Amino acid sequence: MTATANSPKVPGAVLCDLDGVVWLAHRPIAGAVAAIAALRSAGHRVLFVTNNSADTIEAQQAALAAIGVPAVGDVLTSAMAAGRLVEPGERVVVCGGEGIRQAMRQRGAVVVESSESAGAAGIDAVVVGFHRDFDYAGLTRAAAAVRGGARLIGTNDDATYPTPSGPIPGGGSILAAVQTAAGVAAVVAGKPYRPMVELVEAEIGPDAAKQAVMVGDRPSTDGRFARALGCAYAHVHSGVTPRGAALDPEANLTADDLAAVAQALLAGWGLG
Picture (cartoon, rainbow, N blue to C red):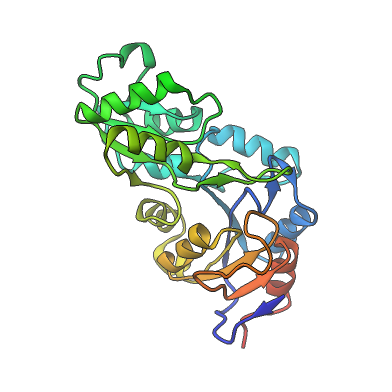
């Protein structure tokens, strides 16, 4: 485990990615649950900032509770960030999971179901995220709506999704298919992009966001997100990035896992 000389002060908030940091396919990574409890006991707020848009907030909170992590009010998702890109009353086709539908409805948008979107007329936005039942018919409907004038929004552009048996295609792979079929580049909501930055800043405030540490396993997503927030990045090897890979951007701290990051923070990393 190493830390660079420009380490920040110990943060008030620790922003944790979920997949590859806290768990793999909802199976907790060794030491993660105890690390979260220790950080909270020391006065740190732990927020879970995830590009997972498939599940509802309640489902994500329940999954965390099932492994011993209370999380009500502490989960921020790319679906929530995508909600910031639509307006109340807009008609939205969802090419994704229930988490997106929930976020759209909470925003006041009208979710247009598949049977209603066949003609692709009068659709304001298509929102794409990870889902396991993506098929050719869904690709056709989404692309037709975009070609008919709808805005294309991606919850995230992560190419892969970590699981205990290795990476599988992620939401970014599905989004790439829709972009190719529609011939339009999407606006992306999740990490590391501005809508997710604004979501975190709205939750804890811009100043607190700058004093936070983002813990993640993917530099292109979590590291760039930390830079966009203006905070430190702690990189862990428990997710998708293999050991020895170049980190771009470089991390302020590298560690085996969340437990090691928590140990460093609680030992005074960054106090100088």
